[in-house]
Image 1 (cartoon, one colour):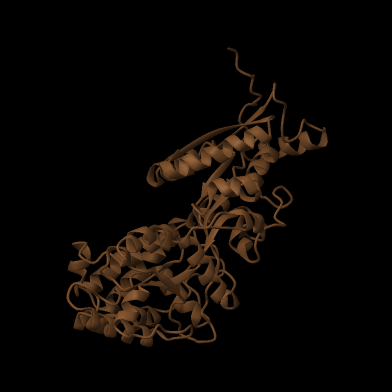
Image 2 (image 1 turned 90 degrees about the vertical axis):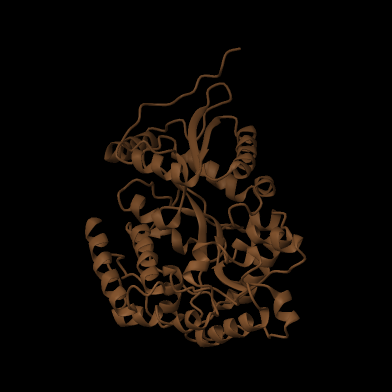
Length: 429
């Protein structure tokens, strides 16, 4: 049985590709799609597990049924292999037409000209308010969010109720949270804790800084934008809890004796709210309950929360079929039937149509309900992270561990982090 021929030209790069696309448009080229007998082909790649792959392929098959002039070559890998492949292909500009982007890597690809601007290419009218704030670089839309999440405090309401402990209302302070952890740990008894040490997370440090009107990175994302004194303060907040055993020790955490809320050992945990989806069945199958509330704040009038993309879709600058690529993105994010297939696997849907048509399970409904409670507190997104963000984050956590194990003071660790961060930023210039 013969296959339909696929029209695919030789790969173009950089300015050559841009010029070719402009010339094709001027000459009235055949547009975003061919025909069923003579389809154009685009590639689409993402990271994830077999479950994500199964539903994504179902949605892609549906797209091809409804768009017979476009053939999609779909491929996926686990997270490490996916990024190893893409970063290796950057030099030759052999990137997929459409691929899944992790927000901390957006500047790395976007600032180096690897991504096609999407203004006027992808229809963005249906996106929920505020979700595109994290998709722009230097004023250009270079990505669209697939799903969104918001920071929250995931907790065990059944444990609070069992011990008569009040759930704090939005606006409670970091000191209030410290005392809540201490109260919970005392009530829960051996082998359980009210929370864990959160100060090794640079994302939570960024939240704390934003609550004070500051930021982790400068406006151009070329340097840090806070002081060593602020970092020493942040890295000292949980020290009293470490000292009296109200949070797991580094040794207990390393031995996985206290891995978190889902394991039934921790009462509260600050995470992106969609983490609830991964915890839900484990906790509820054991007879427990899960809830989400706003995280603590340094200013009751400024929770500094924002919609963050769980992941994004982008179009490679080398794509020879940008209109077809855009059509696939619009379908995956906005087609009602596709929404039913994809569900909330990639977060709370970014478009209104998908959100209206997705079938929400109990966990996703809990996330939706939480986000409704903090909607009035959402602020603008921080600057798109620098290309060095992954390395900065890893160094932040690594150096703080020296504070946890008491091999460095918070002040010594802050000095080292600033030195290391400066080197990492310089390496990206």
